[in-house]
Length: 243
Image 1 (cartoon, rainbow, N blue to C red):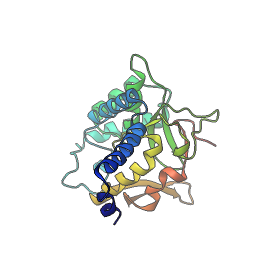
Image 2 (tube, rainbow, N blue to C red):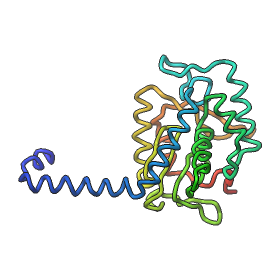
Image 3 (cartoon, rainbow, N blue to C red):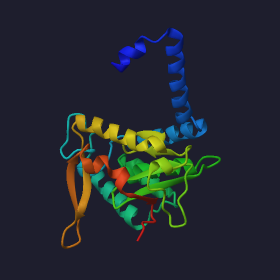
Image 4 (tube, one colour):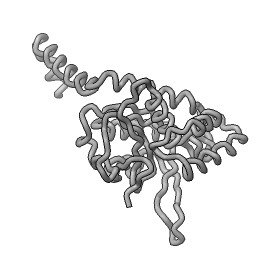
């Protein structure tokens, strides 16, 4: 019914209404055109060097290989093991390590940490590096990059993305998102719905057992815990997890 009523508006009034909405949307999405162009270039850089997707189970984002899953050569498993070891022992968000980047390029795979690191590396190697940070979730298990937003003295970012700067831009290379920070949760949920429709599953840390070991479980991409991940977790600078 609302659509039918809007169709009956006089042509001039209807056109003006559409222009106002279009202008508002354009203003939100182009608050910093240079930032968006740079963010998109960084996203393309990360995707170009990880054509085989993520390293989960050697089958991209899925528990079992699907016909559309990128081929994952068995010999790459040794490279993935090296990536994970270096990530845990040497790599920090403040260290754009050339050797680590070369290892990712050789493996041609990367989970959210590796792909975010490629984005971060690309941005820091610009002629005039922008303000950017790798961001982790606590206690969640995800990493992305932000432009034009800084953590506080405790390395924490605002809990709610509506409180992030208007010109802050999120680059989430793992799911291919490049968007204004304030719109990130909505676009994240839409992306998860699309992934679930394709049969994509996510391997998430669902807690610890009595022996304090991490428990990883395969879940459909649009399960509530995945959809709510950005809302219920603390956001902190990569490598500076809150105590």
